[in-house]
Image: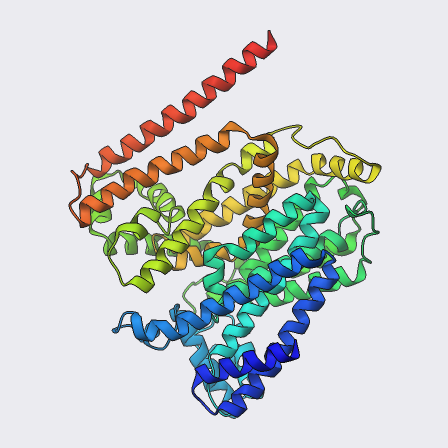
Length: 541
């Protein structure tokens, strides 16, 4: 690890262009600590070479992505983009990074990041962390790749925690599938190679998941027969991860607590849970709620002082603003809004937001090659994940898909998995609630909307991994039907975009195109439902 850190530190320092020796020392120290932490966490998870490869791949894929965009965007990106010319994919990352360096190079305290004087970070936590890194590891020059390296490391650190907790609750197959989805999802890769808060929040969620599963729930032995960990370390990890969420985004902490509360309610061991975790959860929930409402009302926008009222008013204002933005930025959407009833506009915005980034648009709309690669990869990742998430409710309602247990330990775990169906349905409901909130908050924005959605990507990866294993075990026909519906949507919408931009074929009116898509969907799903009913009727005879 030490030679790897020294060589990698030298390469990263060379790309930065400042004093090479000073940068090499800072990057090498950071790289060595990163490799040590990743190796230790992988060894702790205890799954050997395969998990080590996933963790390493997760880390280097994000680091390579961040380095590539940092070097290529100034050369091959849009020359009128201030962010692109500086090597940043996201405007928020650019602003926060500049202000972190400004704070680090000043005589002010790092705690000033929480004062509200810096517009780049609403909550201050990530700004303070970036300033701390710059002040002590790069005091002589601004080196943005340091924060890229840290983001890639933090993103990879979540994999062992996700695998360990998923294996405990749903078994090895789901754990492996979820870990690979977590590692490969393109939106997560792009965010993990940027100085953004999403990789930190995803990993904090994974740590909280492990802490909750091992520290709060009464669990059966792990699948390899080893006794479960002591509850002290997981509870400490759970508390620290929730504290980290409060510093980065109180909304995520509140939502995570709601998810865990529902998990405890639906768990068959809920009667044995002590009051201590409940009291702690309630306190963190209240602190998070007040912190969230305070940050949203920092400039006194809302007259009310009630946290719930502030949150409600902010959501309504955000939705109205995003509806307005969608209508203003797109001529054809504005035309549709003029033609549709007012009550249909909000559902339209929700569906439009869920489909972002739209794959047909990414394939057809003209842009520079580097942005074409970014747009298409992000859209491909989301549209590959979407059928698995859609099928989550079907999966949760399916009974008896596990294979017969082969041992007493496996029998106990199979029983736990059957009992956890209600938990899985609860997870699916919360995952889709967050996706819908992101769609309403981000609207049709193809950057903010997917970014908000990816904050809770760990849970999406867990649900998608469960559905993937379910399909591999059952070969259920509904999977093929849902994929067929998506393919129809992509093909028809791609032709619509192609006719719009390149005049390829005749262009259907938008309403006719939607009616055609919905009609074909109805035929596939209705036909599938009829076949299922027919087979069930024949079997009952």
